[in-house]
Amino acid sequence: MRHSTIAIDVQLDDKSHPKSIVWKASDSSVKEAQQAKAMMLAFWDESKRSALHIDLWTREMMVDEMAEFYYQMLATMADTFSRATGQKELVGLMKKSAQDFYSSYGELRKAELRNPGKS
Image 1 (cartoon, rainbow, N blue to C red):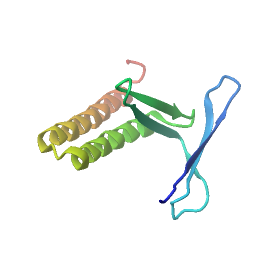
Image 2: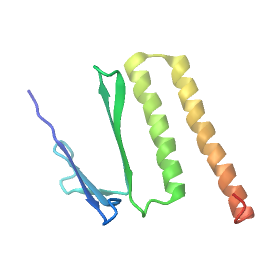
Image 3: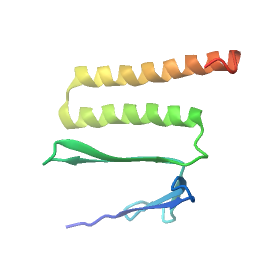
Image 4: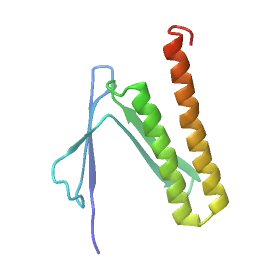
């Protein structure tokens, strides 16, 4: 049986906010630890029938980067759901929702840039 390990190291500032996020996977072709500005990790708790999750981001994570990160995560979840279930209709809905989210963010961002201070 193979064994694989993913190590995540989070440095916190004096207010317990993530200052840096570094991760490394034993099965990765990249041998050195990788920096990240944000991370999402989820586990399914079968007995409670609920998701347990850790969502962290550093102060360096810009809002535009967060929107891109969420868009990519939503699209990735749709792909994973597709592989796990084969539910094409629901996958299409999830992908459309991801695209709508990202398009709406882009429109809101353009409006903010045209009218600074009017949020």
